[in-house]
Amino acid sequence: MKCSLNSHLFSCAAVLTSLWSGIGASIAGEVGVTSITFTSPFRSQPINALVWYPVKSDGVAESVGKDAVFAGEPAQRDATLEAGRYPLILLSHGAGGNAANLGWISATLVKAGYIVASPNHPGSTSHDSRPETNILAWQRPQDMTALLDTLSTSGTFQAVLDMSDVTAMGFSMGGYTALALGGARIDSIKFADYCDRNKKQEDCIWYDRGNDYIKGHVDLHTIDASKFEASYADSRITRIIAIDPAIAQAYVPISLNTMNMQVLFVNLGDPTSLPLGIDAHVLASSMPNATYATIRDANHFTFLGECRFFGWVALMFGGDDPICTETGERKRSEMHNEISEKILHFMDGTKLK
Image (cartoon, rainbow, N blue to C red; front, side):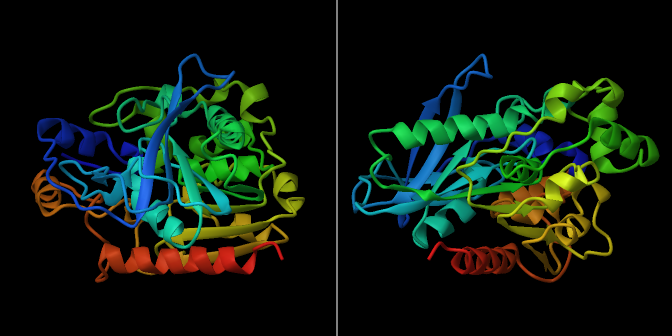
C-alpha cells in the first residue's frame, strides 16, 4: 500500500478506513462542533462544513474524524454555544483531505478563543479526490467566500462572530486557497511549464497519471486560464496562514508584492529539501508583510491528525507510511504543539488593536 505526496493525503488511508471503521467510545473535549450545509452559486451541490466553537457543558461526546487510521479529536457535538464575541478562522484542507482530520488544530484554536469553520471541498476530499477535479483550484476560494457569507448571516453564529477579524488558513491546496482569498493569483502557463520541467515532482505525477488507487490525467496546458488565473480576493479577510501551500511555483509576483495583510507561511521539514510545489520560502521573501517558519523533523503529512496504532501498523506493513511515520525523532504531538505555538504567536501579534 504505497502512499506518497501525490496520493493527495488520503487515497490509501481511505482504502484502509473502508476495510475497518473502528469507531469506539469517545470522551468529550473542551470544544463544540457542529455540521452545517451551505450553498454556493458556483457549485451544483451543497457543501458540508464543520464549525468548531467554545461551548457550555452540554452536547454529545464524539471523537471527530476517528477512523481506522486516525485517532480523531474529542469534542462535544451540537453543544450550546458559549456567549461572547469571537474572531473567525476559515480553515481549508488539502487536496484529498477533509475538514475532520484537521480537528486537532481547530480544537487548539477554539481553546485560544476563536471560532473555526472548515468546509469539505467537493471533488477534493478523501472520498472524491481526482486529478481532474483537484485542478479546479478556483472553486476552493469561492467555497470559502460562500461559507463566510453563510456564517455572517446565520442566526446561530452571526451574533458572536467578530467580522472585523477573519483569518484565512489552509494546508497544502488549502494554503493556496487561503492565499487566493488574500488576493494571490496563479499563472496557468507557469504551472504547466513547472511540471514540464519537473515531471518527477509528486504534484506533477499526480496530475499526469494519478496514483496506484486513483487514476486520472490532466493536460495542464489546457487549464481554463480565465478561471485559474482570476482573482478570488475577499475583502473581509484580515490575515492569512498558509502551511505547505500548493502551486508554489506558479504565483504571479505582483499579486504577492502588493498584498498588504500579514501572512504566516509554515513549511513542514528541512527547507533545503522541500518538494518544489510547496516550498514557500521564495513566496514569503517577495511579500512585504510575510513571516516564514519551518518545523524541524516534520514532513508534509505531519499536519494531519494523530494516527492510531492499528492504522500506523497497517500502513507500515502495507509497504509505505508517510501518512503516519515522521521523518525524524520527534513525535507528531510534539510537532503539533510547535505548529500551534507559531500560529498562535502570529495571531496574537497581528490582532487588531
